[in-house]
Image (tube, rainbow, N blue to C red; front, side):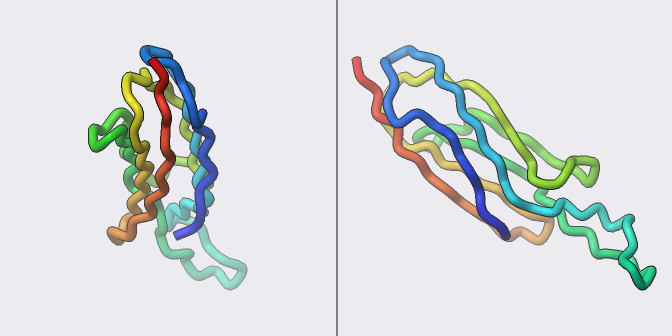
Length: 107
């Protein structure tokens, strides 16, 4: 699968609500369109996105063919401890792309 762009602050204060933004480069082909020769373009979608904060899912989305290409998500998380944010995209065939970011939380 393609790559991701992720915006996460590297530092936060304990209890602060941080904003996270992700953009995943993917065509999200529905399987309903046809190419220049009239042949059906095979379906190819990302079916799930999960963001985990130190192993606990804090954001989850199930995607379907109606989602536009290059899915973008923006959400907020309360920073309560230093740890790893894991971003996981799974496509319809079970292929997984994982990115991580470290978050340092100051008291």
